[in-house]
Image 1 (spheres, rainbow, N blue to C red):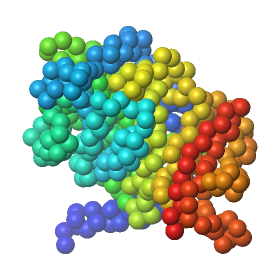
Image 2 (tube, rainbow, N blue to C red):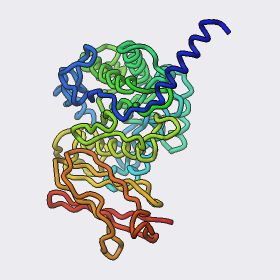
Image 3 (tube, rainbow, N blue to C red):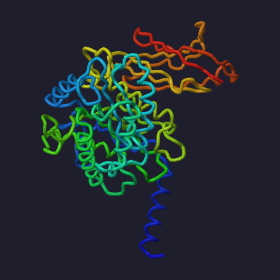
Length: 420
């Protein structure tokens, strides 16, 4: 064996061994809380100047573009009677796993516009480097999925992107700049292949500190947020490769979607955190059921509340909203999985700091359990209901149960099904 090959093997063994020491936090500051401060000489915030809100001009253009999204026929012509429009995901394995859960809950949401068709275009193993090639098979698979859903490429109106590169090794900011340039290439691919796609939302990776492999660990997962930030800044700063107005547009309008990174168990100011159980135990990178649901809920909440999204996502657009990343009121999500046995996750979003109580009732209204009874900060929260822990460990019978969120004088309830 050659000496260089032997050294490479030793290096990979060292990296893999070091990754098995999973960390519940890395001490890194989310971009949303880094603000005008710096990470390795690069300013935080989602947008220029350390801000977390879109610049006024970019925001107003996005709002106007969102108002132009209308149902289209298969040739891309406006057809408000029989037309449809498509929300498409672009990304790799984590993206398709998370978006498939989003699609399952969004498709049955009574608030969703019935003209909106949700298509999962994300595919396992398809990195940013691979899909930057306009001839990659990735794009052919999406075309097949659109056809199978009964829509065409000319009906794609909005995309959500969550992408990364596998096994990054270069130092920051080299790998992050590479990822930004790859994003430039494939958002241009999007405009070429889906000419009526006017809006693209982007998210970066979730927490990578539990990773057991070199696929995308920390700090690369965290640093990928800068790649998205720099891409959007390029467009805001009028990069000619990312023009989005007029007949010569090369890219859709770009914006942050939900920012998904949090420092493990260290809660963000909005309450988001990532537990080890939010990831699969075999690799610590791909999301578990709870991790998939967490991303799905964050994306759904974003689409229902962001000023550029609710106009096309909702059946009846909300007239006003308090901030882009918080709901207009406390929100209780459908539990997941549902039906369940024996445990399920209940997620909820708070507009402001509140004293929260969550209770479980049987179908006759008898109280079964209290899951939460304490002050909680504004933001996204989850709690697990394990039916086997009730009745002195004997559990409860199969059937329909009701869970209710009480906060600041508001009560919200949903049904769930225990199926043993």
